[in-house]
Image (cartoon, rainbow, N blue to C red; front, side, top):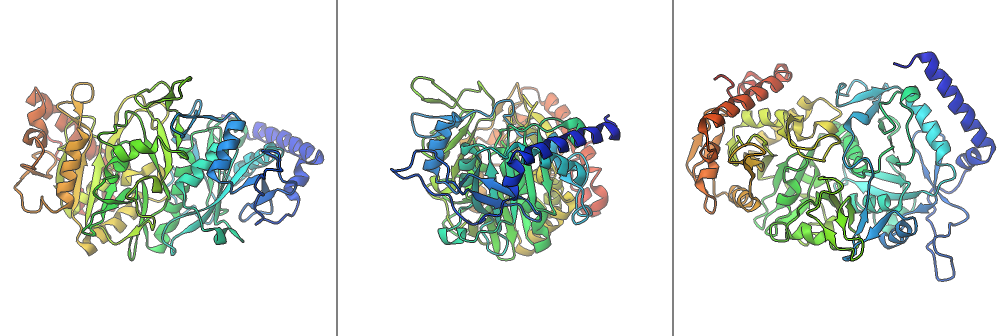
Length: 582
């Protein structure tokens, strides 16, 4: 532990250094009033490539008296490619995508995320291991050092929207140290029309400076990496990590905080729509198949990861996708595979031949969590509006590392609430630092790391909508069959697609079902195109007794996890879980 005296000494030193930088001109730059809406001039044939304009654009920091200069503002993807190559930030693949490395951090750093404890939000926050508090004093200390650090740096900013629905949309400014991260932001968020950029005023701002290191001893954080959210000022600071997923998920966290007050349910989910105008809503954590299953050539894609459910239907938060690319198959995932071969796609930590620049999507040389960030329009049947009506089906996705859960089952209303709050899946390799093989986990709302409010608040909103619009809920296991991880094998994606399509098309409405003796869910006895034995996981195990033992073990984990939420739900919901008795 660091004493208050030691911390104050460090702060005093930091303040002295900041004053010295201000005297040398850096501080004056921050204070200079400039036109906050001026756009950076484009280099012409008469202008040396990469040259700054003499009067740079500035990005206003909401609710503060400071300004933040951004040398390059709202550059196009092509211009940012040129900057990225000039800066040595990445390599252009043989197919045109931009391949970058994120160094030490190849996944999110959830233990380094902090929310500022301040009066306007503190009573709404679900404080604990997911939402760690940091004092406003510590936040301002780090922020002051950061502003001094970036005073002489070239920065990039993009003015963007998050939220397709005009009633729930927020304007967002993303300021980055690297050009490739600016492309990432352009790809993932929604790009405003040109006329909206004149007079653009951001509702919140993200400042992303990977080369800056936090001071854990002086600034109340855990390490040199910090993801800090100030919900009153609507400001996010990300330092010490190049992993771009932090930009995406910190913005998602802000939306998860804001939307419940607008009677809109924010969801870690994907959405697609069939020709029958039958929207499907998929919940699931990273690696469970949201992106893959929602990119169905037979259905229009609304979005692959973050949505809201408002008074008149579903809407995407984003304008792009952030897909796992490890072992992508042109046969089973043709649409996503094709995006890796497009100019404009950012590929994080994907291996490639140094001579030919050919991609190796099967390689985990740098991480299992290789990623591709691309605009939604790269998926041929995507819906540019990002909006649709209320869902006709809801699918909960889980990657069961134990190989116990059936590949598809139907849930009652009470079971749907139980499994939403449980959020069972497996943390798959590479999605977080330190996870190298699948590990069973429970993540409330299928997205606890991004929920600033108590999960019960979101569960109640979901239950209300399921009841009001009479939506069936399916639990789909995209994980293992024939045994646990290491013995069994991953569920075939073509089998999963067939089962999901049958559910969405109403083909499972009148088939025969049997009740799972441990989990109580209803399992169809047959589905055309799917081997009947995989519908009953016990039949796929070489040792049925081993299956029974593992099923009881998993059931006990469900019961133990749910015990912390039982007081906030009805008796019927609490009783809707599995039976753990032997």
